Amino acid sequence: MTPDPIHTLADLDTWSFPGTALAVLGHPIKHSVSPPMHNAALAVMTNSDPRFASWKYFRFDIAPEDLPVALAKFHACGFQGLNLTVPHKIIAFDRVAAIDPAAQPIGAVNTLRRTAAGWHGYNTDGYGLAAAIREDLGRELSGSHVLLLGAGGAARSAAVECIQRGCASLTILNRTPKAMDQLIELVSTLDAKVPLRGLALDDLSTIPAGSLVINATSAGLKPEDPLPLNLKSIARPAGVYDMIYNPPETALLAQARALGIPCANGLGMLVHQGARALEIWSGAAVPVDAMRAAVHSAMKTHA
Ligand code: NDP
Image (tube, rainbow, N blue to C red):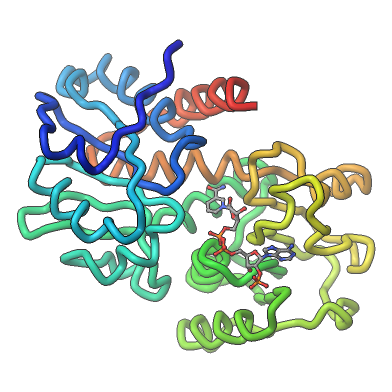
């Protein structure tokens, strides 16, 4: 199968797609599996509603400095929806016409829906995380003691979702204490009832047994990366969720598997955040299984 072409900002000057266009914007964008995932869903949705036959999802490499101009051009060209990935999620937050209230505390958006007044921004990453943890680990964020590794953009979505869903407690651990403190300050205003704290690496004995460990660091993307946490240094967790999906098994997941701890990689989160975005754009039920199958198949060709 020929891979989807990578479009650029210049292509919008002569854009003439006759149907309903959707797109993912990133920099780089070469490794995104979102186009095959969404186009597979649209093919299935066409069986029950022919209007989706004219919908297509594209990918664009957009440099961060070009994003404001690009957002205006995508709107002028009639795009119905956009996904944003690294490094655009935070940059776009202040450049859209409206923000979904649930995305407000995150300060970042990954899904934009066209309105007459401009782009309406959402963040579906937290929804995707919660759905994947339910599906892959059989656990709910609600009522769980969560140990969150990382304090970047993905950790911000995860922390807000944990608090909004009423986790039993949220403990954040990050390599750089300043970033950890900033994240704690951000989420501390959301719900005073959820016990919240930052943790130093030498204080791991206080993590309750049966916690849910979520890796939202990028440690594990490269083979030489250190473990973001040695699982042997905490009381046995109930599960480990690693947001990384490529490689499919990080050193953290390999350790969890060796210790017999239920664990999963970030593919389910990718699928569910995408499914939620497609629901927002289309207002229709979305075939999650078809999206998952398309991602698995695309990952094989990316490997
Ligand atoms: P950011 O760059 O915003 O944050 C990176 C985080 O990783 C920071 O907390 C950073 O800590 C930490 N980190 C980086 N290197 C190391 C290391 N060697 N050891 C320990 N900690 C480290 O990235 P994002 O938050 O956007 O993404 C984080 C991960 O989540 C990525 O792997 C990304 O692919 C994944 N992700 C997956 C999604 C999915 O759908 N499955 C969706 C979104 C993200 P410090 O503050 O010290 O720099």
